[in-house]
Length: 304
Image 1: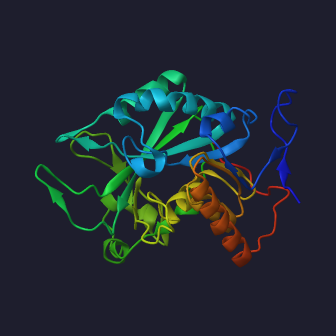
Image 2: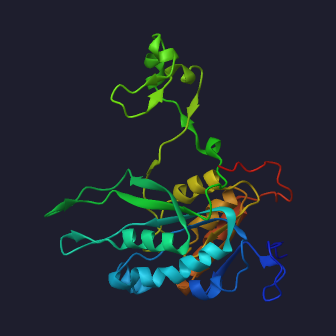
Image 3: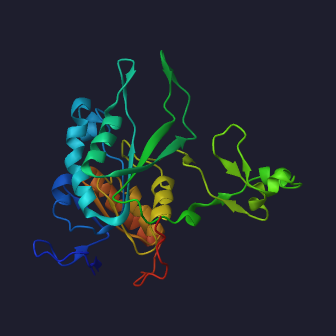
């Protein structure tokens, strides 16, 4: 049976229902143009990097990267709900000894499209193997850029809290008078803290740096990211029953994360070989994880 959700608008040029939990084989921009307005709660993706993986995705020239991506980001903005978020995993290349600027240029161009560049998360590849070049060391991080359509968006910060850590055992054992009030910075920065607020707490909010291992078993895909990466953002920006889009889904990692977290998904992939890998990964996950559908949401979204 096909699962469907009602799109948020009713223009007759689109279907009244949207087929979900599906990987669509086709060109990203072409498929996006056929999707209804404002139907996705989160968009998470890692598009082909400029001039990378030419043997698989043929590569996008650096000088044309912004021009290539802007029509796609225009459609992504249209299909994203007003309170939704778009997470773009990307990293600029170094060419001829110089780091290129096309990612920064893309950010500025997307702002002109009406996107808000809300936050920049850093994925630190904690198991990156050593290496160096004559004028730099090995890349061990990538950007995860958050774009939104408005300043108020859904965010569930409690869903990604982390253990407070061993520092609390000694630091909170004996508090001074200063620790029990808001202690303003002595250098005039305007920042302050009240250490006593952490008494008795087991969990704390994380930073915007994610320390996650890279994917070692990439299942035949040349640029797969770890399951933990989309999982973290899906937890942070959606709730059970929400709909997630990955317009460059590759071998299906984002869809697998959605299945594990009881979210719906739609993926787009132009390479038949990767489309088939995604279908295979999804079927395997469904066999291992029989989930109960959530017809009615019980949790109200938190708008920032």
